Amino acid sequence: MRPERSRGTTWSFRIFVSAVVLGPIASQAQRPAPATRDSAGITIVVHDSTVSPRRFTLQPTGVEIGSEPGAELVRVISALRMPSGRILVGDAGRRSILRFSSNGTLERILGRDGRGPGEFVDLRSLSWHGRDSAVAYDGRQFRFAVFTDSGFVRQAVFRKSPHMFLPSMTLVGLRSDGSALVTTGGSIPLGDPGPARIEREEFPVVNYGSDGEPGRLLGRFPGFEIAVSVIEQGPLTGGFSKGRRLFGPGSAFGLVNSHLIVIDNSAFQFDVVDTSGRLIRRVRRQHTPQAVRPAHMSAYAEEQVTAILDPAARAERKATYEGKSHAPVFPALDERVVVDAERRIWLASYKRPGDKQQDWWLFTVDGAMVGRVTVPAALTVTDAGTDYVLGVWRDEDGVQTVRMYRFAQ
Image (cartoon, rainbow, N blue to C red; front, side):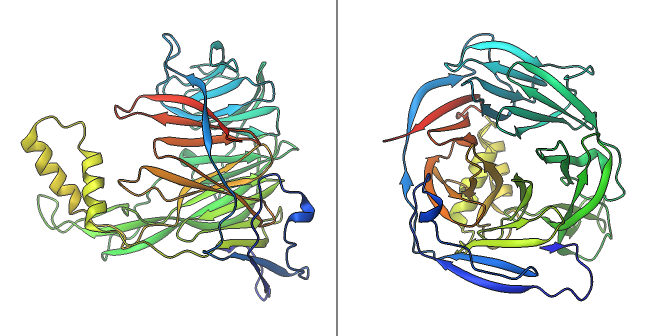
């Protein structure tokens, strides 16, 4: 990670190794205290790989959204459970924010397809803003909109920043004062055509005002890995191609108490960056990299060809996928970070091809590891609280529903 800093700045690192098992609602007195540091220092919290926090199991609540006629979901990007118990679902396929009752009944469409206030052309994200409102981002209109479960509140358009590529801007989140953190990524630049190589993109994070006006650059952080290769066959022989490297590392961002949370998933760790762009804490769990094996490639290829019905075409395409170039080892984490109702940070172990389950690890912003939850691989967690987990379920046919679970007693 390379936050912005002036030349000559010295960072002093103090290491704190944790071997304490904590529950998810442990009191502050039960948590290991962070290492003392001076104002120019960075606290490093290291958790031993042999130490596991309290493991929690989930039970279905019976709430399943999207299975009723008229309430079908197309492409869900997020689901949030409001303090009232109602559930907001961001459906990018319908370009709408839907409000459901606590038992899963569709009540109202809060934001819909369109260009008016609180309407969307390209709904890309839906996340928390405080604990009683949500913020949605439209990537085509470059604007965010704030909603409560009663309806639309306000919106603002992001103006172009010299540090950002406008079409691929992504909202990290809104602070309590309405200011925003914005990043950009997902687009692969043309760049230098050769030689063949592996390179790592950088994602800038920029402060924006509540009115959408760009502020200063907070920092530049590692993005995804790009493979540059020379085309050896066909009419474009001698040219080059660029694409994301299969199983290569990536990044994710979150917002906790106005601090930026940065995930570089090549390692099992997250960084905490303060409002000035200074790295103040790095939290790490020791991790042994897992090699990408032929069995993983076979499972990956099988996942890619499920929709091909012709046996000969299926076998040919499967062989192509099995021989695809890839990183030698898997990342430690998925490119996701979820911040729950208690401001805890949820990180997901990397979901490898063929995995049937996925572990989510719970941390506090000060580095305590407070829980571990195992979920089916078909469930993508989007929100959680002290007694529930909400996520998007994708069945074997790719049909999405939103399901809610509770922590087993």
